Image (cartoon, rainbow, N blue to C red; front, side, top):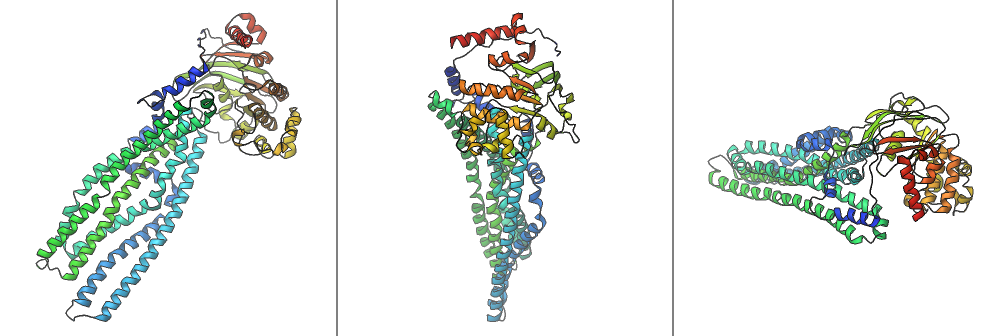
Length: 636
């Protein structure tokens, strides 16, 4: 085993009382404007920041491109929408023909013509209903398929991101991307998108027909509506910015809820309910105020169309009554024109609502596209190599790593661990121990240097081989809400109940399983809540045993458990380590004492390595850690 020693002295980490630390953590995020906690929730990825500067059309174009299901059948849906718009235009024309040729014409009242015209109008109304219904059904199917696809693609992309993206304060925001942000697109994709087609077509076609009837009255109506366009444009910009704030606030609220629900035992144990409530209230209040700001602009925009429409109708009636005869307008044409102006009000009045839906969709799409644009740092090889069978050697060569935020947490690690050895990685909290474990599983790639397992660069290993030959047992022993056997079977999905029983037996845990109600089919509850912390670890060890890895990584499986369960865990770990390379992130002295090799990490650097007894004799960093552990044990 080789290692280049570094001379940096370990930084001393003052120990703090747990209650004070918890209180300070919650106090720091209390509802005082601009706290560090709030700033963290407002942080966005560079990809999201880049999209913040993109225009609405650019975001919509990219959003539609990222949602291929929305484009399927779009041409037919658009054609149906255009036919619907054309049908609506036919109604005023039929009314004009009925008045001028069937009621007020030179031949007097023509009952037959009126009956035919009315029947034609009724038939056209039925056809319009059918077209509207068909358009809406097609659009809803396409919208739901697109939302499903977008949600699945976003969720899949999040799971492909490295641990550099999965920091605590980003989890709620990532959940919001898959849930609430996708939901913001529902109304837009189910109505807003086609409304743009229908209303734009209806607007242009109505103006064209109005010009045929009377270009003079058309200019009168347009003169009233033209000032509305720049006004809506200015309001639209402010509303879009407000809805971006809403989406950020929703992500922040979800982060708070997720964190406080997960940390409920700590909150209850230390009597911090009041502070936790203030913290959540601050996030909810921020979201509430953001919604109010967005609604303020919508409340201004919504009645504008009605206001301008009423003025336009009054102007057309006045102009038509005064100048109708001079402009060659008959009574039927003037009535038809008023119907056309009223028809013009429909797309204009809907414009404010469509804009509101569009702003919401753009804000949601910005967030989702920001996640989808986040590069996947861990790219899997196309034709990856397979790891050899048996225990696997580990080599770190100049390994460096940094999370997206903050400085480097690992600084040039060089280390060789022979196959079949048992290694304990020790160091102060925050020294980089757990990051090393995650790199060995390739949950992320080093920002510099190479990680080799079994002599192969992990970046060149096929994911199937890596998943089968390298296993990590995390400290929390996470379990899913499924029967015990199903949780163990995640170690090898094709395993039978007999295989699961054999995995427990090989670890000497058959007696414990037999005592459970239902045995291997016992329900573990949500997050394994029906089992103790130590029992969850026993299940996690059985899961690893079933997978039969060559490299086993343990994030201190014996921490925070009762002595009786710790003994069962220790025995199971000894059996699990047989014939494998084991790297254990050690928080307890007993783990380091049992290891073949102890690796001491301090401030992201390996400062010592060697057997437990040898390191004690050196009087270095490990000796100091040992004395600290021993002192704490005696004090306890």
